[in-house]
Length: 149
Length: 446
Image (cartoon, rainbow over all chains, first blue to last red):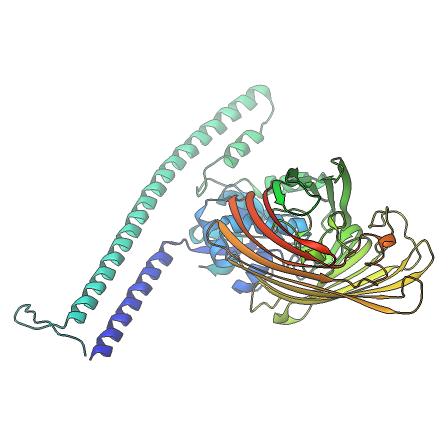
């Protein structure tokens, strides 16, 4: 009887926690990782996206160098990418690319763009670029390779 | 057996623990409601904000249309055009807007403009501090650390340059200038990268993970075995030569390789350890390293390296040198656990008679981040024999001997670019009195 009540309460507490998590997730923006429309890249897994964004994979299959584009700090899409792809916060991201440049692991940190409009323009103009947009900002000019979160 | 208390709620009896658990549940639900309500409030605020932005954007679009119209009229009058005006206004527009983006052609033009002139990125690293010690002959002193100017430049899609210049305070209070790294790099793809110049040797993990900037490393200084030559270091941590590196197709194992050929290190007293311009012999040093970064466990890295060189001194006695290292490290945003070991093998005695001499060393370092604080602990050990022909002969450089001891410290990150560290060291050395030291350091990177 005693154990039963305890288990019931624990189960309820777990449900409450799950509900809370769901609420927080819902507050995050829906963001798509996108590339130039001419890119024949197959849909990416999160791990593959992580390797590209972090500079572990720096060239496409044909040998062309990948240009990674990021939106400037404090934008909601960037928060989603940092959490879901980099698994870092802004400070850790800054330190990671400082150190990666210092060790020669990457030639340069991803390029920061001021707005989604700029992101779309660069993605449309550069066949080797990869970036991200809010779901509602995605149009026919780009190709979606991963949906987040 | 639990004690039951008589209680009547609408004529029914409830055990005390049921009431306690029920209360706790109610509290949890209430908290959840609060969180949910807060989230709704945030959502509402965001929706309002978006609405304001949308309205502002409409106004911007109207203004842009008017500007375009005025520009067109002006151009008609002057007979010229001014495309930059509209573009610059679009570039300044607020994030998240639906303003028509700059045309792809203008973006391409911008990209071409950027690529036509190689740009240089300059970073600076440095540190200052204060140290007290009960070591005989040492005084309590403020000191400046190394000022590190780090430059990178991308020449083409595959070619880049990396340069690092140091201004280092010396024991005689003068400042020494040192070209720490100068590398011309060519990267074919992720599997093959080639570089020539002066670089940090891929011996073990620490040497290429942290380089010179004190801000990057958790502790104030480097482990004994990875100390730089101006701090009593004895390994060939800097080389002039060529280095080839890349990833090995190995699936989730994440294998990487590094192969290096260089001049090796000079050990004679009064010489610069890195042989920047002329090698003391025709034999070259070889270093080969392999390490794995399993994709299933981000942050884990394990590897080994083997380095070989032939050392020649003014007495024309040659010594073979073989340095082997192995390591397992795990780093994440919260945890850092570094473990490395080395074994140096020198052949040939001081007199040139046959002989084999081994020097061993290791360190282990653990740290855990708590917000902006990161306490850490490290234990370092190096042991070179007294008859060691290189590390035990005063004519061939500083005596390495046996050094071991713990370091205990706390790092506090002031912000994303500056840190304060406090460290206590206890050092035991063969033939010398053990001593304690307390050191502080402000390190920065920008």
